[in-house]
Image (cartoon, rainbow, N blue to C red):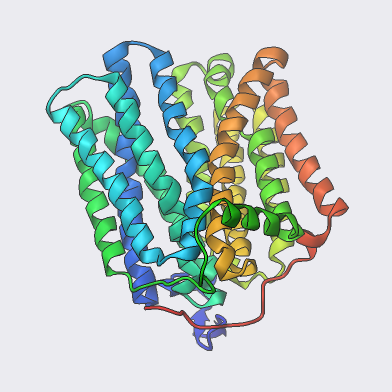
Length: 427
């Protein structure tokens, strides 16, 4: 059987060139953190389902359920930039352990309050906020570690593996959680605690990841501002963040699913299918993503993926057959995974290591905040203009604005991945 080079001097059979690239798993440190993170992402979906279910059972109020989103968002917005600054001035392994321990403690506390039947809505809000505070520091820290664990050419493959595992967790986790919480809500928190134990083990087994060029620096306001100043002078990174915001804020259709399901597809039974469609498309794209690491013009690929996302979403908004809407949303989900991989990869390989944590903090805010703003945009415009205009118009606007940004500011369009191939710094 013939093969082709994979960038590392080895050959891959042709049938595997489309399969997901698993080369990063050869590196022990990355393999451990991938295993722990995958387990934790699956388990966290049980808590994602269990907390709002428990809150509604306690209060019978959708308003209290909405407060959960606020409790999770505020610590993230406040702490993500500071967490990224910390990741640039201290050992990232130690910081990941400390922030993960806070998340772990929050999960154990959720389990305890369920077992003890404390029945306190306020306690639920506090524990969700505590978990979010830990995540705000852990997320940029972990992403800043990845380029230190694998060779630079394998960073896109490492990101693809991470996103694919997360997508698989977002599909399988809620389905399993829905079955489990029928018996007792505490079981869902127990699964989350058990899987997070694997993540803690993985963080403990990481080698030291000391900062570069951090002598005399402290994670204060000045460090945060210096990261933002660097971002302001880097059109490639600024545009990669901008197109992500455009894609999510203008085209994210999730808030319109209940109304569209009722108007076109026979009622609530179609809502779950619509919610799953984007994630399923992302999962399939991840499993057939062997080509992603071979693309050199990553900026152009990112722009193309965002345009494809917007067009697919717009066409899905015109569909009056459920299968067609699901198919088009899955195409959009596939494009979204590709754009997510390239956004993350460009940041990790373009930004210097001593600034990577702070920029990952900004990235975390953009990634988490964009869909929430998209929900607000879709819901508001749907109420004012109708679901079809809000859905189709948002998708078309995202495609047009992303293309216009690429033409008006061509730095991202011209960006190509670096040619260097340094090996992993730690094992």
